[in-house]
Image (cartoon, rainbow, N blue to C red; front, side):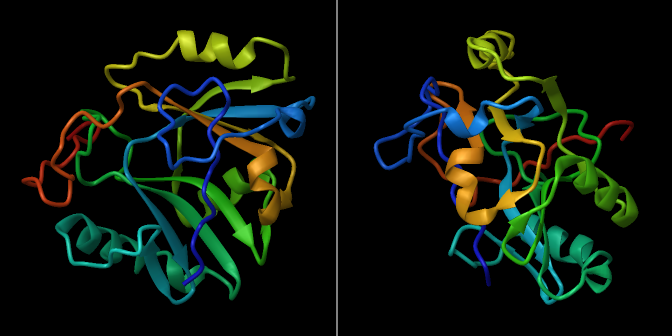
Length: 207
């Protein structure tokens, strides 16, 4: 199992807790082509040639993970050794409830070996595999105040936050510099972890 690296918080992220990592500089995000996607409130999950696993070391059974395993069974035979698809398993409702998702698994990264692949090629690979990507909120050149503007436009009642990354490929080891997240204040609004609460499936569009 190769765990997806932790995404550091942007310096303006109000949802960073005491044990979270925060970016010390934005230098790695200052570029001509940056993409900002919605941060979905699900379980970080990796699909690979041998199966699938959640980022959490907690591997206990859960209906949302049962669904994910069934979904992954149709994807993983088409993956090469060393190829990983990373996304959010959104079957179970966590802190944010979704009523009209395009799919219960939304992808946000394609990794080969130790390299995060370019964003445009990632979208093409997702299309080949029948994977729906996370929503794109903005794309363009970095400018001062950009992240504050995107944050101000969030509906924090239904959006957890956003993730910014360079669209070019980069080594997985450079994720702390090339990718950063913004999480709303007070994101976790229940003392009961979602795995211990009654299962409430998120809604699908058209269902």
